[in-house]
Length: 119
Image (tube, rainbow, N blue to C red; front, side):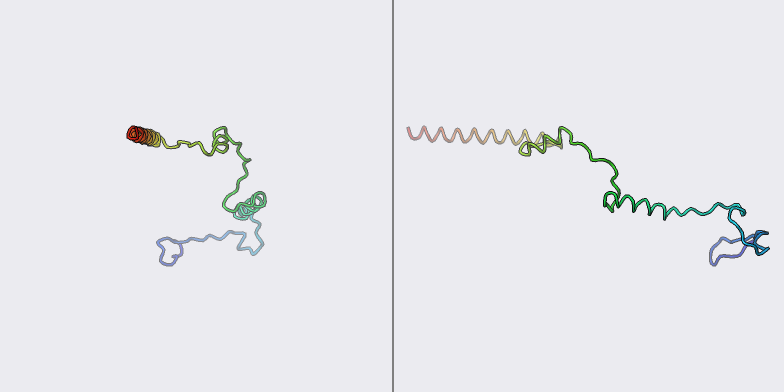
């Protein structure tokens, strides 16, 4: 049995090493336990190096800049040309074009009727 840890249902059992009882200084290598590696300090150093490289605190961007694709260049060079990204917009576009066509036809008919009325 071990020693109770407060209100915890677990207990702690401590065994003393014979080397500790002698009062001598114990080397961790002799005791069998490897030295503890400070991973927090290691990652802190990595983060500081990356921040120094690009100045980005949110995350590091060590990748090289991506090259512009033909589609991206087309969009940049011709901002007046609409680009359809959502296929549902194709339906809306054809509907708009039909409405515009009908409106132009009605305007033509109205103009013709006006001209006929003059004559």
